[in-house]
Image (cartoon, rainbow, N blue to C red; front, top):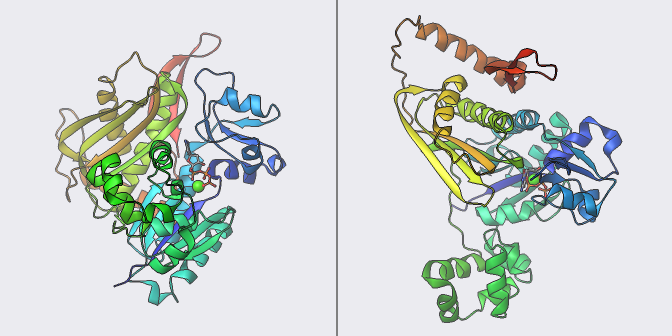
Length: 405
Ligand code: DCP
Ligand code: CA
């Protein structure tokens, strides 16, 4: 059956949320990220006014400051963005259960089997866009495609509040052929550069490229992928979290850092999201992975298999902090990720000496929390995930409480 896939992508997401909550920011250059005077700070994103100055995500904050001295820098409020992300997920889930969330602000919704219930994929896409605006006050761009690639590129076609349809391969060939090769997601700077050197600039030129020349330059797998994708072939499935072997989330930190408070806050946000998703699937995890990206862009993954299944953020944090012990302490961290896997259906009782562990009670509370959050949003319940003692400015011992989302 011909597939119908919708992509939604929030416009300049973090910065738009900040504008929404403080309308005086509109018409000013808004940068969400680390402050320019903090070492290693980077731009997470910025609004369109800032983009006009040449500022973009991933750029060092001090460089952004030099491009626009009047720009307003705002520290990201990750837990708020995660909450909004959750509100959006609830909207999407009204239309299909085959959804792949690829970022806090972006997802693929496969409506092949459900579009007839709602008057077609285009209607669903526009309805999702309207509901997102109504319920969150934020604009998004949506696209409809016959594949993941065509849907994603459709959503990227018009911003803000855009809608575009490329739901057949014929439309792909018509719309994409004269576009530059780097429009295709997966063709980064380096591949683009090598293609350009070969005289291949547009997607049409890639379609017509000599396969032998391509093979010589890019080896078998890559050259075949390039040709297929140029002709609009993309069979990748929408992978839902219900069928996936693991549920993971990662983020870039606001600055390259070794500061454990920044890192731990980010980890807790991620842990809450993956735990929520795990609970929603009604399963428990027996494998935890901590992913680290260092400032030199090298990556590392530390994993642990657990003797008992877990799904509570507090328990996951404990294991993640244990894994953290194995991270290179001499390098700054650029990004972190947490994933849960090895899912099992039931939780066996955890036996800890001296612990009064009432599993049924705990499960009932967990279910209650799920129900309340489903109805009123993730943030209505605040949880103490962790706390630690530290000294305040005056040397007084205080307790830092991690109260997130
Ligand atoms: N992000 C980040 N670091 C990056 C890129 C993005 O922290 N290097 C965060 C901030 C963004 C969010 O992820 O708001 C979504 O990323 P997008 O690439 O979708 O960018 P935006 O939503 O900001 O802009 P656009 O309107 O182009 O989608
Ligand atoms: Ca976006």
